[in-house]
Structures are given as structure tokens and as C-alpha cells.
Image (cartoon, rainbow, N blue to C red; front, side, top):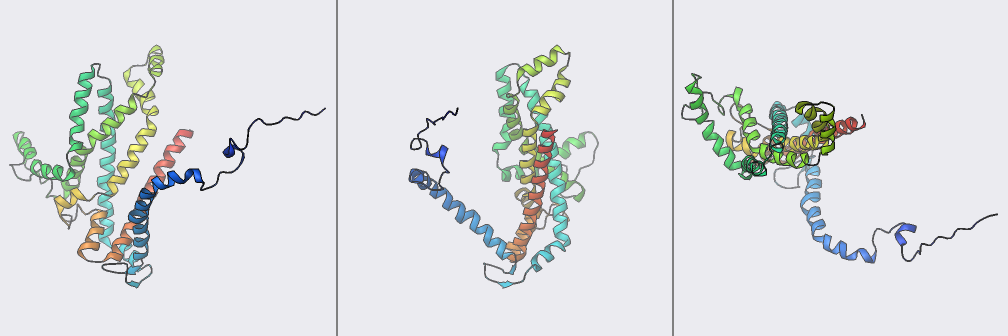
Length: 315
């Protein structure tokens, strides 16, 4: 005995459940029309320049897309230029330290602020630590040139002089210049990262902490075995965003070290190298080739970080 079961779904009422949806239908016309200005802007100001820059990287050009085709010569020049690799080293040096200290300190600070019992004090510290993020990077660079003045009139050197330490050339000595940039970056990014982590900490279920307290765990064990693992995706996200921003460092080192990345090229970053070749030396082909090499480095780092996060989640 066979039983025939008829579907109660009307194909005219639910066409998307029974047939493949077309890419463009009359019902979607309004959505495409409203999205058109944004899509056109992305195509004109993002996609087209990226394609044009990629083509330009294979040409010897100074001003426009016009130029003689040179193949991979621009890439060979960049990859064999010692100044480029020095800029990559400086970028990684300042970037790794900035991301490590920035994410670590902001996560610890967010945990401390989150555990404050009174809400008015929590809001007070949120505002205090977020305030540097409101200040522009240009103003921050000017401020730190006064704080890190190499002479005794510099505020930090004055404080060090009170304990008998000789003045340090924070931005004038190659040994300290890169780390000084890291300190300045840490001051600027601490507030933003802290606010993000505070918002993430509110999502941690309180039941986990209560269960850990029943098992006799103190606050340190709860922080290491509950808070840190639960917020691991947020931490990886902040590391990825911080890494991308660190690889694009330009404004602060340009304001402090100039186009030469002084002192002694210790502040020469990859983007500053691109700027020098593109706008000072009028070698747009070399500049665009260096841009795509930098893009490759950022892409590889991002993929590695995302794969690490995915693997840790599977484990």
C-alpha cells in the first residue's frame, strides 16, 4: 500500500524555496537602485585604482598610467633594494611591539575597569582612557615631540634627571627612536582597544564564574581559564586589525622623522618608502610595485592569524 503525500506549499507563494533564485528580479530593483551610488563609488574609487596600480607596477612611469612596459623589473628593483628591506624591518619592529603591548595592556586594563563595582567610576575611567583616541595623530605627534624632547627641557628627560639619569634622545637616537614611536602608539591606541574589550567582557556568562567559584577558583584562575579563552576571537580580531594598521604606518613617522625616516633611517617604514619613490622621486612604477609587495605581506599575516584562530577553536 502506497501513500501519496502532497505538499501544502504553494509554488507561487514561496518561489524561493522551490526554485533557484535569479540573480536579478523585478522585486530586487529597488534594492539595486539604492545600492547603486555606493557600488559605483567602490568601483570608481577602489577597484579601478587597484587594477590601474597593478598594471602600473609593470611599467616605467612617473605621472600617469602611460609608460613603457618593463615587466618584473620594478619588482626586482624593490626586492633587491636594501632600503626597502630596512623599511620592512622597521615596520615589523614597531608593529609587533605596538600590537603586543597595545592588546595586552588594553585587555588587562579593560578587565580591571570591568570589575569596578560602581558604575560611575567605570564610566569615568572609560572616558579618561578613551580620551587620547579623540586626539588626531598629528596632534599626538606634536605633543610627544615636546614630551620626548632630547634636551633637559623635555618633560620625560626632566623627570629622569631628577633621579640622576642623563637625557635620552628619544626621537634623535636610532637606538631609541623606534621604541619611542611604540610608546606614542601605545598611548593613542590604548583607549580604543580598552573600550572594545570592555564591551566584549559583558558578554561572558556569569554562570561560568559562579561555577568556577564553587570549585574554589580565585580571580586569577577565573581570568586565565574563563575570560581569556572566551574572548579569544575578540583578541585575535584586535591583533589582526592592529597588525594591518601597523603595516600601514606613515603619518607619525613622517611628522617626526621626515621623508628620510630620521634618525639614520630608523623610522623609515614601508609606506614612507612608497611615498618617497612615488611622490619625491616620481617613480610611480616602483612605488606601486612596493605597494603590492606590502599588500602581499599584509595578506599573508592576516591569513596566518585567521588560520591560527580557526585551528585553536577546533582544538
